[in-house]
Image 1 (cartoon, rainbow, N blue to C red):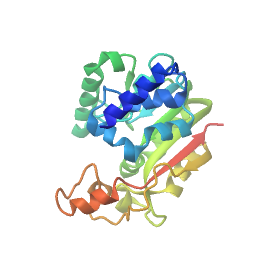
Image 2 (image 1 turned 180 degrees about the horizontal axis):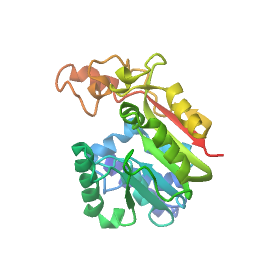
Image 3 (image 1 turned 90 degrees about the vertical axis):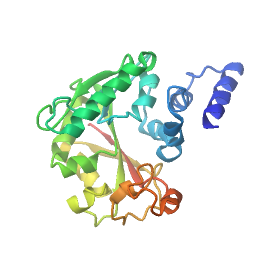
Length: 270
């Protein structure tokens, strides 16, 4: 049904004489609801708000954008790649394919397979590899207009690499460049690996990491907030959809809560 609505929306724009690329919002909407995306991923737009989030970060279709740690599935890459394909550049800083960690190796391959599956969408994505400490530099050094990372900071805290990662994001940006961060939001007392291993990080910790690297905070948004998330689950944030780590146990309860409460932060490199 969502895909049908998207098609009707797009056709309405065309027949009304308004080109789909005439505004940033229209182009983001076309990418977020495009036929290249699975219905499962489109359904998650309800929780992840890609159009509103990227628009709030100030993205333009002529930017050079680095997406850091897109994961094996590249959920946000599906939106960024077609949006930037004609006028901008997308660098996907994926996992190290030669990593000692099997999870990183397998997801690096999964991401490359995804990129090759639809050359009409992903042919211009520049895939690089990033890992602390083996491959600590992002590309293109000092030339990026924007760096985006979604729900990754807890993992960097778990591996004691968060400070180095935020420094790398600072280095890759040009002066005036923007860092956009979305992260599962913990309560302010949820400091340390006891909590980051459950996926939750206090907003103040993320701001501190960014400011320590040299960034200045430009703003906070509640676009991805979810007040129903109680953040007290034994299996952490992955208790909630889409993972459902408890499988069918209390599944209706967690479905009613929805995906996690997330901070959405925008920083600038002075």
